[in-house]
Image (cartoon, rainbow, N blue to C red; front, top):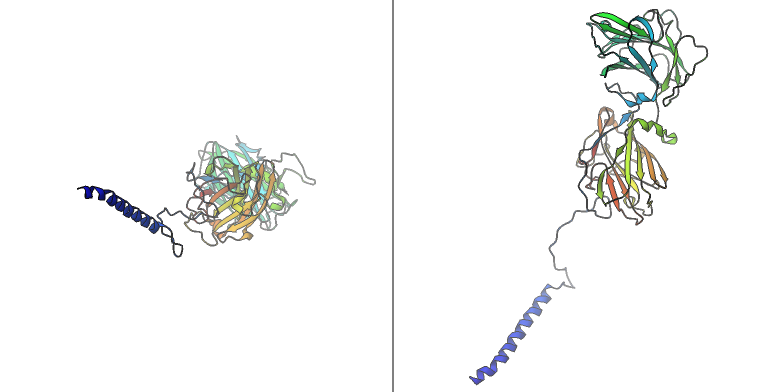
Length: 452
């Protein structure tokens, strides 16, 4: 028994030695091999960062399915009031021919090929006859040669338009190209017409004969008739008593009482449709467009504030982007790591999962004027200027749109603003719609700009 007791410590020491050896052996097996592949570890796969060298944690959108409206700078005859008409004064139609006359006025725009006419009639008692001329209607008289003679000649015509937009063509009308529309407003109605020039071209200081007549009907009877110039009921057979219109440059709410030499009788001005070219950018034209604020924060807590306004014509989408940002930083050569804006567009209003060549576009414009195209967009599609000041910067740009733009009533759109606080890194991102920061590959979350 004494022998047994003496062996117990020895046995304990041997057991401890074996345990220590096993532990050390196990640790060596878990060390990385220096002459081969490292021992694999288990982790969570992270998605690759999108169009940025730095991955960001995004914040859920404040607004979803965002929409805005772009105002047209060409009257579209779409049965809606368009703010472009607000730029010119209305000419009253006050010559009484019959009964109690309604309050009425007209406005005129012109370009090289067309005359755009808009007549507003305040008449709350709608009456439509069995024919255009036996109900509420407006008659236009055009004397392109400005001859004011007793008979109609080349380029002279008249037409009647009902309160519902039906047209009856009179003498000299070209029915293939003349078109128009009418729509109701509170207390009355509006008639808009596209009257293509037949024998002349639109040009500053050109003069042509013109007149407008408004008929008010009730219970099948003509109870009121007023006209701008002629008071003798002659204009359906003669252009002698029509008024004179002088084509003038584009204006903004010009209320002057200017008269022109050598014009007898009624006279007024037609104004040239405004044009936007970045060389001589008329920023006051954006006054007709609502300002849209960017509210969705995609990264960061606080930073630049931004808004935009949108206009369009038959070929271009025009944007005025204002960024309020007093911490100017354009040190980095990476566009997304300096103060910059990013535009995302689809010409047909779709929001695809992948970019489509020729239809979808991605542009970056930095505060210092640097520019990049993404996803195959051509740099020839974008013209822009950047004006930076102490409190921020303004980007004005015109995007030439693909053919799909001419037939659509909306475009897919998003605007992102990148803000660096001096670190040459992207410290804050605010967007109009998509906050996923995947818009360079996936357009499903962008917003919509309505064109009509």
